[in-house]
Image 1 (cartoon, helix red, strand yellow):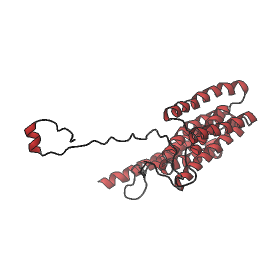
Image 2 (cartoon, one colour):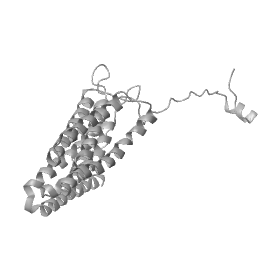
Image 3 (cartoon, rainbow, N blue to C red):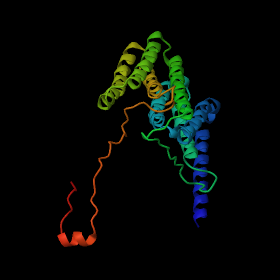
Length: 270
């Protein structure tokens, strides 16, 4: 019965992917080739996000934020392209997320993919595989930022904002202040994004906010990890999920008869 349910789930998710693909083909039938250039990368992006990038918590968080950024970025240029690129990206991402988020073979077909992260004494691991994941994500973000810049407003000021944002994000995580201060500074990213929307609209350089966002996200990934030495691949502190050291509690062992006789909580030995 359990195997039947697992295979039923597998068929169900496979059917969802087929339906989403059919909707995409129907929606973009007149510009199918051009729309496929955005649908297919979205499928790959989502699949790798849930299957590979999920091994790195920081990279996974950044790339999840980037999903909405990419969608908004495509909305801003789809009139210029004359192709429903935003809808193609969204449908492709949903299909890729289903494909990457569930197993399709092995002992538990149709079940959700869950990765158990290994931890060292400090609670965080490294290695070249995590370093490569973060480096690849940073390259993807910078590549999307440069592509958006070249399509919308390929000007020197926008390029300068992209480079400056990359350095700013890198410095914030490479030479971080205290955890509270760093988290407050992270709020500057969306605030600056909103300000640059107005600046870009008034100056005719609509790519300014996107250059800022892509640059800072890529910089965070580059600055937030060790790239050499014995800690290669490990994230740089401070960490939001870092647990406080546990206090050692001294316990006193007494026999149950003695506790019942005294009828009180035992005190600490001197």
